[in-house]
Image (cartoon, rainbow over all chains, first blue to last red; front, side, top):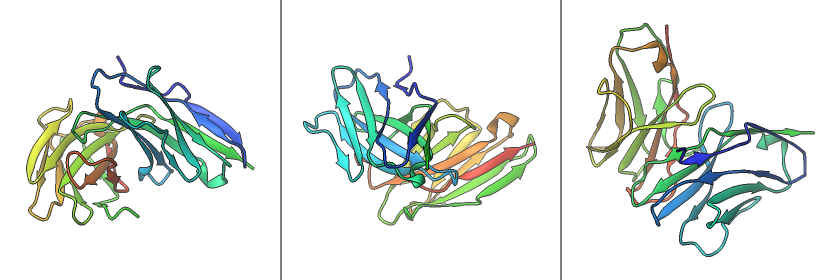
Length: 114
Length: 113
């Protein structure tokens, strides 16, 4: 079974609007971390936001927030007030237990239209 | 910028050859991981080094090997290159095995012809 599933290969959003990128995960480890990374065409993976499995509050970082629904095993990324520079590939990833190995999903290509 | 640098940025090799990719981790980071990202896919974990010892390996054959040096920089070596080895190779560093986010370099794009 896929550990990380991103069901949206591509998403389009108008500039200044909000967009939600979906991510579901599968693990039996009670301790895990969920990450979102942005990958522009240059290739570098840019860390956006982190949610720990024991965190009580949903993570927020500026325009990024993570809608963490533990019972549904989902960790959707919400980008508010989209900007043209947000156009990129977005990856959801998981780290299980105490290790630092990341398991990535297949990614979602976000296009922000003017 | 993350402070993680990879070299070279692009490389073209012939099938059967050997290649070495290099990564300088961010200052103070003793853990380096390598990932392979084929076109249109998410990165796949190759292996991780922690204080010069391999500390976890993904589903990659032994012709993928690595080293970590006392200054925590790292090399990824691939022998007997195959066409399917064409990919973006990403290096990530973190302060330790229980740290949260990993910081990635810009990657090395390897093309095998």
